[in-house]
Amino acid sequence: MVRRTSVDDDEFIKLWNETKSPRKLAELLEIGERTVYARREKIEKTRGLVLIVETPNAKKHHAPSAKAIMSARRDVNRLEIQDGVVLVGSDAHYSPGHISVAHKAFCNLLVALGSKVKAVVLNGDILDGGSISRHPRIRWSNLPSVKQELDAIIDRTSDIEKAVAPGALLFRTYGNHCARFESRLSANVPQYEGVEGFTLRDHLPRWADSDRIDVNDDMVILHDWHSGVHSGWNDVLKGGCHTVTGHTHELGCKAHRGFKGTHYGIKTGMLADEHQSEFDYRLGKPGFNWQSGFAVLTWRDGQLLFPEFCAVRDDGRAWFRGECFGEP
Image (cartoon, rainbow, N blue to C red; front, side, top):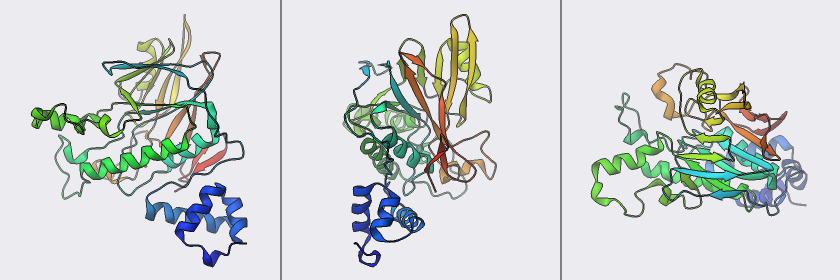
């Protein structure tokens, strides 16, 4: 039996990755589960990584891929899916030295769902880009550099790549914050166009990027369209199909029933935590209708079922179908 006093952080990480179960690790180390969770949280913060939990129902074998059709112009990619799940998260605003609760839950749920997940979509604004924004600096705020943010993006997308089952497709759409990366460069050093590293996609080779993703013949996924409290309703009403958007940081959906059946205006919330320094521009005011979390979309026989959501509640934990998948 391994003794608690003999286990350093490296050994704890090794044993965690072998067991992927707080209960099993607690039994192995002869300590309480709360102690295991506390040490896990400390290691995640100090090492800047995510220790993933694998539930008893997780399946890590090969996941047959949905069919992807990529656009040469990178304007509209296509996804065709008959049966399976697609996780859609947006507005991560990945921050150096910080791992949000919703991101932890995103990774943990990917493992739990295993081969059921056919595709993952990061629906815009994985970058914040505060230091290259057109907006003026707020007082003496200390903004992270582009390099620091880029390193955080690579670390967090690597978490997702490790958590998702083999064969699942990885998609990404461009958000208004993502655009800052290339807009600043194209405006100030246009002579460097085409040089490797000057686009965000150069740093994320496994993620198929585009402005929009069309799913089957009745859904569009894009970062933003309409704004305001009724954005989801206006999206589905004017789109005439299922719409999936982020940008407003709202989480939920509006159903519209017309002559062609029922369609949903789905809002994907934000993978970021509301208290991140990237949102200090609110100057103490709450985020209007903001909700950390993400959408879990399921298809059967090519038809979208009623959308589900993993949401971070007021207790600071992320819940899905009555089970906690992420904690502070």
